[in-house]
Figure: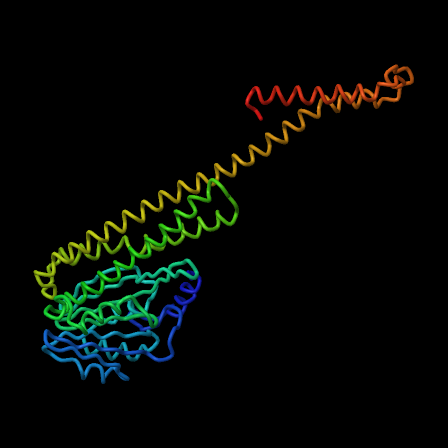
Length: 355
């Protein structure tokens, strides 16, 4: 993934700042546009074919949520930037899917970038997608890399008029979207926590190379989570600190609640990282203990056979004058001495707690 992103950066070499180049994996041949326009009494949903068609359906006295899926059409973004006075560098950040999460404040709008995270139960890995937001006076524009997101519940809530979202402005819509994304962080953390519990049960009983690989996989997932979540605390703190006119006063308590949730997710990630580090230490200790057990058994076996080898070496010498070689009970006598020696050594080892 990182290698592909670095290769994408090569497209932008020697280009002037603000040049629109999509950095990321292509996902759609055509850009998909969906629009929801609502006020406290009505709600309408449209699937637009062109940007101009979508913009023509936006009403001045209602809240409009324009969702753009697919970032390959740079000409569409240029027209959108011209329509809403979006800076070319902001459009460049939208197209850079490796962008660090951040929030930027402008006079007429706010720009924010987040990572939308879902846990894939089939592959047992995180699906990470960048989502960008433009908040204006009565509109929110969201940019996604590919179809599918975590916001269907919010769309249903708007359509059915549940809660207070239809009575509030675009800033509350932005809060609701971010809140839903953070809620899915918790869901992903629960799935990762379940995986850690399973590995915790195996690490003492069945340490194996496959288990070590799984531990490192989860460690990598937590690293991605940490990189996505840590900047969010700064983003929300910036919104609380700036007191931008686009953010209503009665929305501030909800943003503070978002900040609390973000801190909670960060604490959970750090806790899981500590637990995973402890499991890796326990895994290495288990492997070391198992190796010590094997070496101890082999050492005991070798030690038992040392005197037996000594006896066999004595009677294996080619001397003529060895009375025991010609005695009728010589062979069983030597075997008996060997057996008694082995049993005596085993009893001694058990008494010492070495076996």
